[in-house]
Image (cartoon, rainbow, N blue to C red; front, top):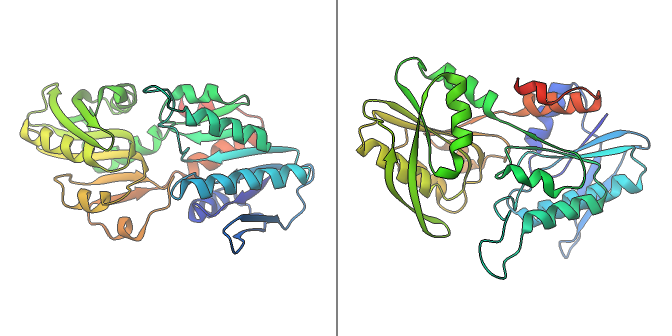
Amino acid sequence: MKLVSGNSNRALAEAIAAYLNLPLTKSVVRRFADMEVFVEIQENVRGEDVFVIQSTSYPANDHLMETLIIIDALRRASARRITAVIPYFGYARQDRKPGARTPISAKLVANLMVTAGADRVLTLDLHAGQIQGFFDIPTDNLFAAPVLTRDIEQHYKTSNGVMVVSPDVGGVVRARAIAKRIGADLAIVDKRRERAGESEVMNIIGDVSGRSCILVDDIVDSAGTLCNAAEALLKAGATEVSAYVTHGVLSGGAVARVSASQLKELVITDSIQATEAVRVSHNIRVVSIAPLIGEAMRRTAEERSVSSLFD
């Protein structure tokens, strides 16, 4: 079993390696003068079961190309099996044609990874579950729910008025899974999005008066939806509002928006490497998914069940 890391989230790769008690394989991933990606695997991987750990986070295109070229290098070095471990799968929000003459970029990226030579994919909380079917190779979509649930139970009295809230109708299944795990009620924010990157909260489905609300989502990008939802929940009588989100994209002025919002705290995982702004923010906290991903990788290598992690 060999572990290879790209440049997108070295800290997570090192944490996974520590969990598995294995060193990261020596490799070089750098740029030529014109910013072309150059990869060199500096250890023998012939006949090995190799795991490439790389999120396709910002800058998404650079990290995607790194992933493809690392996979190609390993295939040409005669690795026995190559598993692309992608904690955050970029382009997942482009999983359908929302209008005429638009691409399905998630399918294109899946095709690129298969063509590069990946034999398996291991990812976390895909934006849409059907993206698993975009790959023509085995794909395991892990869930961050056990990690988030454990943190909620440590920081909140779940038997005392906690309500899980989905920030939109599309996230109800995800929020319901968390609510079921902690034995909480569920509410839904009815949201209308006028244009990409902007949202307007319309009303709250469910009685949140006097309740401690926890918003649950898979991706926080501009943070507009979460901040608007928090404001609406407090106006509807919620005592406090926190948010648990798997992938902290937090682009543009999102961190400042969260810091200035009425959110008590935003909890994200380290599927995307935290920026300095995130690290110093007073109301953003990061929990690690390294043990979850590491255990799934170990079970994959040992040909054991991965789905039993979530039973």
